[in-house]
Length: 112
Ligand SMILES: [Zn+2]
Image (tube, rainbow, N blue to C red; front, side, top):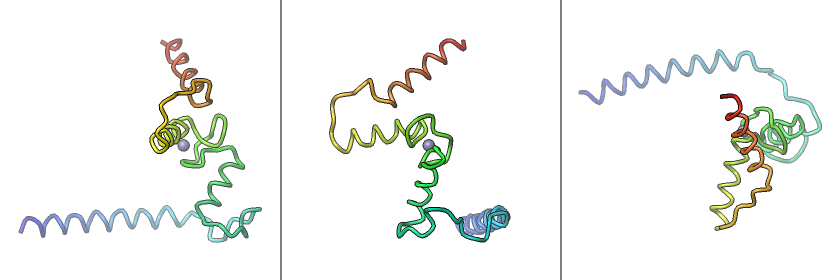
């Protein structure tokens, strides 16, 4: 009994979010984006990444990237992911993501 009620509620929630999705996609351009990446034989995600890189925005979330191809949050994320994957022990503190992190910390302290 209880589970069926929960399902019905979930269904309602799904219907709500679906209608919201259709509203938001209605504003999207119907035609393909025409640029230098349109005809490349790569996935849509890769094209998105290339476009983000071209506009110097984060290839993961599309926010403006300070330097490099990702925002600070995703620079750190990818750095830690690679460390784990490659089993690295050292930390290279001259690296862009560390320097940007330090800058951010210093800024936070001076703002106080
Ligand atoms: Zn990002």
